[in-house]
Length: 253
Image (tube, rainbow, N blue to C red):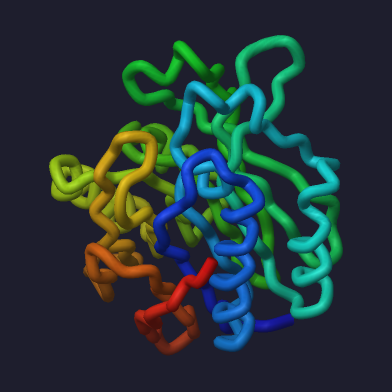
């Protein structure tokens, strides 16, 4: 069992509604994470489709979707857990905003966003419970964007045992200061390492601001990515502290 855990937050600009192109982009970012010996990589909100609520129903995924196969093969080969944002099929109802968890030796599972942003309920339904999962000696909790604005989400996730809070978000320049203050406060209040993955560039009409970031369990900002470039922000969590780095990634078509 490993005591150290290396987690990468992926930052990039998605192709609008183009799953095939976005799979290529995800695989490029995952390849860099594998080369860095990352144990986990998390992507931004709805990373596989871009933030396109109007198209979410037709683009939605299920846990057993065959499109997860290339990611599952990488997870199994390299022992990496891959966490990808995509709409979740929800029967005949509106889809949910999800994070799909692809692990080396477990079936694909997902977390559904519990707290919808204003206007999202026109296209999505909300999830009903927090999500934590175990990785070696660590317990990780998941959050999607507006979840992080609700104190009870972070506190319930911490109560469930999470020492690491992985936030998959879409944040613009206008909202960045307030949103990251909340993330810092969650880290400090609940003693969790907080790792945030944001887009850069335009998606769904929103001009995102990049600056994916990592806070330690005391709420100290350890690293912040640039605004406009694809990259991985990486934390290696060790008994003696947290090592961080930001690795630029050149994404081709």
